[in-house]
Structures are given as structure tokens and as C-alpha cells.
Image 1 (cartoon, rainbow, N blue to C red):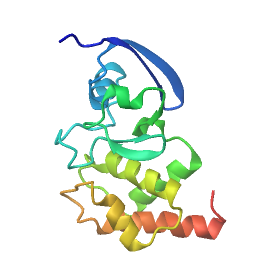
Image 2: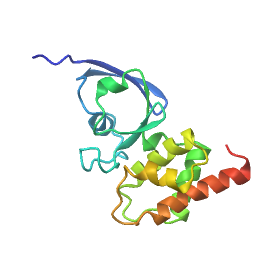
Image 3: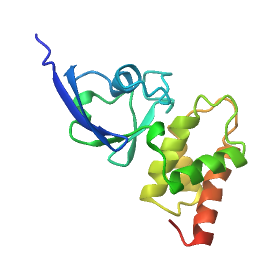
Image 4: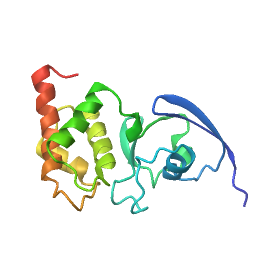
Amino acid sequence: MAVNIRAWRCTVNGESLELEGVAPARRVLDIVREDLGLTGTKRSCDMGRCGACMVLVDGEAVNSCLLMAYQCEGKALTTIEGLRGPADEEIQSAFLQEGAFQCGYCTSGMIMTVKGLLDSNPEPDREEIEEALSGNLCRCTGYGPIVRAVEAVIRQRQGSGGL
């Protein structure tokens, strides 16, 4: 059976792009890291269990190791390298201030999950935060600092009237 190799069209980090010769069933994780050189999206479990490879597709957090090229056709894909606005810096700063990382391997996936959560639900409660982060594994921090970082962003946004 022949694989239909064709151009892959997607918006990545705000830029429209077209890559020639992409198999529809090629993993987005591989495209992002190998073809686009965006290595902030980490490879880890390759089974969708750890969240290190998390990206946003049309604003929703998705494990890129389980995402095939055809599933992103014509959609907006955001990687950690695409987070550049004030709201994004706010999340990253909170992670730094709360010590929500140690080795840093899971951090980009955690930040992408938090970005997706806060964009869809600006004021989640602790249970909603923990549920959103349940697809992200961290072996270093114990999750307390990560949850505190998310809560700090929420408090900051409430105090400043949101972004």
C-alpha cells in the first residue's frame, strides 16, 4: 500500500508554512523537532502518557507524539517557542518565581498545558488545575510548585483586571 506523500500546510507559531513530502501519518512531534528545529517540544514516552511533547492545536493542549500530520492540516499549531506575548511571559515568570521546575525536561509541556487551560478557563479552581495537569508527568518537583505557579498567574490576572 502506497503512502500518500504530499505538502503539509499548517500555521506554526503564527507563521503559515508548507512542507513538501510529508506523509499524512507522520507524527507532529517528529515534524516539529526534526524538520522545523523546534526542540523545546520534548520527546519522552512516545505514548502520550507524560506530556513532555505537549503543543497547542487551535488552542487545545495535545500530545504531539500521538498527533499525526493530517490532523493538523490547516490548523494553528503552537509550540513553546511560539509563546511570546505578555500573558505567556506571565506563565513562564510564575514558573520561575515558584520554582516550578528542577531538571526542566517537563517544563515546556507543563507550560503549554497551563497556557491551554488558562486560555479556555481564565479562573480554574485547584481541582480543575490538577485535572488539566494530570496528563503531564514530573519526577522532580512534586507538583506543588507547579500548581502554585498556576494559582499565582490567576491571582496576578485578577489583580490587574486580566489580559
